[in-house]
Amino acid sequence: MSRFGGFAPVYDENSRVLILGSFPSVMSRAEGFYYGNPRNRFWKMLCGFFQEEIPPKIEGKRDFLLRHGIAVWDMVTECDIVGSADDRIRGEYVADIGIICGHTPIRCVLCNGTKSYELLQEHCPEYLPIARKMPSTSPANPRYREEVWYAALCENFEKGVDKPLCLR
Image (tube, rainbow, N blue to C red):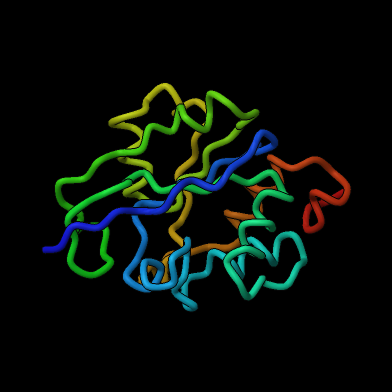
């Protein structure tokens, strides 16, 4: 096993929704940014919700997130791991999401998969009232359902330009 660090959180003072992953995949670590595996459904789903093209570069993705009030981080900030599977994570350090939630108007935490939700339950239970376990966008998840993500996003963005795929 090798030890790896995750990415710094992406957020600003306008972030309203926090999306928490577990830990960056091998492909994401190689790219240097969240959800770097082109088969991961994250960027397709999120950009599809806002009816925008997927930004090709990291800075464009960061700008996209911040423009829409979305913060992104992983529950595991450092760990020993071989490959990308969540069940291979060992010796993890867990994120203090209070760094984000305590300084932003976060009103919802969407956990991208079971591992992030379980870690939130164990280490940050004070955020459970605003948290929801979402189907992982990982290409390894055969139970992914985009409509579940869209419904959660619709609940957290106001009608109008923020909410393009929701009923107006």
